[in-house]
Image 1 (spheres, rainbow, N blue to C red):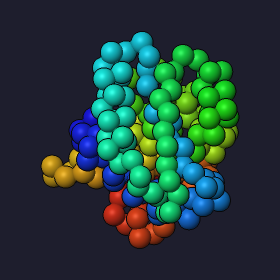
Image 2: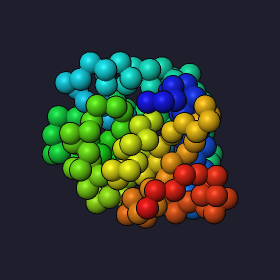
Image 3: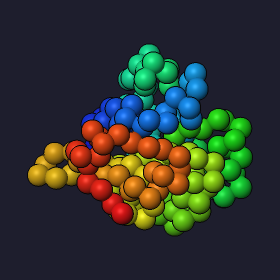
Amino acid sequence: MPVPPRVQIPILLKVLTYDRNFERKVGDKLVIGILYDSQDDDSKKIKEKLLDVLDSLSGKTVKDAPFTYVDLGYSSEESLRNSIVSKNIDVLYLAPGGVLYLKSIVQISQKYKILTITGVPDYVKKGISVGIGLKDKKPEIWINLGSTKAEGSDFTANLLKLCKIIR
């Protein structure tokens, strides 16, 4: 992850406000799932940093919707599907370490219209919708247009002109 969680999370939350389908998809409360590899120590450490940042943003809203979050240790496709449904996940943040499960994560997110976000730009090339990379030592938003469409999101032109677009 080229950009630390304390920088990338506020950017990613702001990106959500540019999704024309946000209100239709989210409803009264935004639920963010933090997906990490429960067998990978580095992934667990990053998850903890992400949770700390989200804790520090307690009380903030995204398009007037309060947000909450849950951590999801990836163990199987079935457990991910069950968690998405039972916990009403709206956005899925993929922490580093889940590359082995990336294909199934993308399939599930597209089936359930769950927007995927990450701090690993290479994951955007492999099907995650939105990520944060680095350009000239500054954060850069990466958007995979095919994935965002498949997940039911529609970002404004004002956002897209500022991003690195992956097709």
